[in-house]
Image 1 (cartoon, chains in turn purple, red):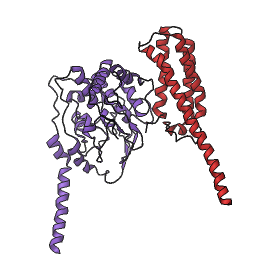
Image 2: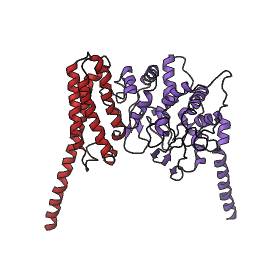
Image 3: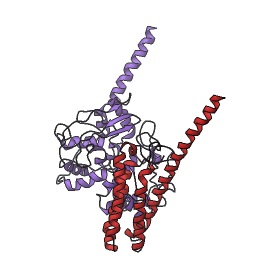
Length: 308
Length: 145
């Protein structure tokens, strides 16, 4: 009996130690992290960063509520999900309440590895699984832009999540499954414009985050990427299939997709609603070539029937 | 016996309003479809896929103004759900804003009606009217189920 108890206690102890090690932000960084090194002659440029700001739709989540000003990034928007409520934080350059006190290294770590300056894991409602694809120079430009917008005072309330999702440490396990740490690598068999589209869609644009179904663990299903999914709020709403399948964008021409991204009107002159209307406003800030690149990439995806 | 009769009568009272609600949902959906249909000609003209035709543009603006005038009555309390509606519950939480947006859509259509005289004025004025679609859908239209 005593022996049995000893075995159980050791198993619990070893399990606890294993969990602690596997969920360690430092270990993840050591294995999957990348050094934050910028080319010698590189000068970050806020103007170039602004393009990435719109491509990334940062304001859609982070703008101050209830303001309509998209460069006031005080946060406060509540993302209602099956895991609980995420309260979007302040990312304005306010030194105390926003990210004004961050160094570029802190920003890169958050965007690529989901690690916050206090050493904790960020929740993947902040889509670093996509942002990790961005180049370090683009991240530097985006960071430079983020420092040019107004500082907004006020910290947001903490997230209100259900157990066990409220244990940040546990995200360490999730990251081993869903965060590979790889930057975007161009496909040399494709055109430069196609690669530009692939980079925007899979990196800053993070389109797959809503337009793909998720596993029970809340990660994207890799074989059903872009086949559409459920609204992240856990409601009955559906997010459309982006692949060129007949129940996706199969009947849309390149020009149809470009026009939609610019104006929000579908080929049958219906107009986008909900969170996509917000995305269209952001896409309207990109230049025509970026929208063409996105269209070209989407048309090249493998056609998949819409995800259940 | 009385109980049965009571149930029957209550059921009748229940059935009638439900039907009426499905009906307004059907009406507003048809009206929305008509607005989308009215956008096809001018939309294609803006994209250079159809030659400019002032009469068609005016017909579309008429359809917009007509829809904007009829729309406010088609969202009564009690018609929040059913009939595969894509109306967001936000409509009933912000009724005044919702109706103000419809009124602006109607007045923008009428302003454009007076201002559009040729292809050049069409290209500057018409997109302003079209912006009302996305502006309202963003808040008040829910995703398809």
